[in-house]
Each structure stands twice: as structure tokens, then as C-alpha cells.
Length: 110
Image 1 (cartoon, helix red, strand yellow):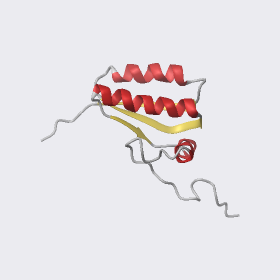
Image 2: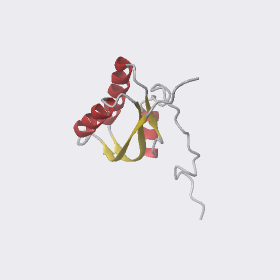
Image 3: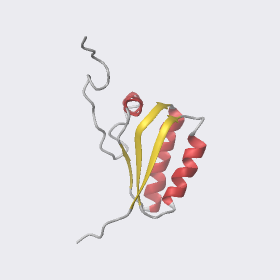
């Protein structure tokens, strides 16, 4: 029987860009200090650039060094698009929900 691991959940809202990564980096480091599994909710990310992508990769590396589980969840369309653009959607070790084209706003039925 496996003991339940406590989960620390971090929600990133708004920009995941060079303007916000320093503060978000500290928020993630503080969350790592809890020693629990870390879940990062990306559903409210409205903008993302390469600095945001670097933060995600660095967080995964930090989690691996600490032997601490880290999972990115609920990828927003912006995050999903950036991961796809960089061909990284399957390389961070997290399941990525692939939304239908209608959910992504590609088809509008009038």
C-alpha cells in the first residue's frame, strides 16, 4: 500500500513571461521547500514567451535533482501553443490535453 503524498498546488495566472519569471521562480522554490508533490496549474496563463518555457524546464530539472514530483496541469491554449511551437508538448513528462479545434477557437459556427 502506498502512502498518500501531500500535494502543493501552485496556480499561475496571467503572464508567464520574462516580466514575471523571477517572482514565479521564487514561488516555485518556496513550494519545493514543502517537500510535497508539486502541481502547477497553467489554466490561467494568458501569455507565454521563451523565458516562461525556460522556467518550466528549469523547474522540471530542479524537481529531478530533489527527487520530488512536479506536474504541470491544465495547460491553457497559450501554453499548449508555445509547447507545440517548440515541439516540447511531449517532453516535459506531463500529460498534455490536446483540445479539439472548436475548443481552441479554430472553427466558429455562426
